[in-house]
Image: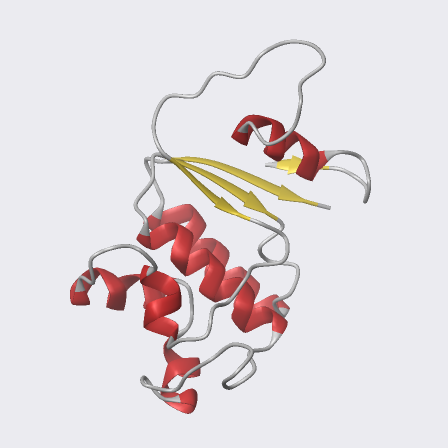
Length: 149
């Protein structure tokens, strides 16, 4: 876990790891695939399933497990499985967007996860549940870097 005040360079550090920022000193080396969840997750026009599985083969069991550990099951029950979300569909809250973005990263089954403040948009109870179910237990055995203020 990396903590620091707002503007202290935590997100920039993650971008340097990803190779998206010029490094003036030192070097970064990583082995394996990297899943990245930015501070402001993006949503495309499509169902939640389409947003989670973007570019990947749909695996019903894996999808259901990821939805569960990212605490999206209740949202899907309310919104509906086939409902389109995004600019031309149903608008998601900041917390829902954060959990869909996390689910997208988790579904990708990467070796390394860079999580840029994924819990800040969630209420305390949901954040605790996502942290325990997803980040601590589901991603156990994976390298996880969690950045927060």
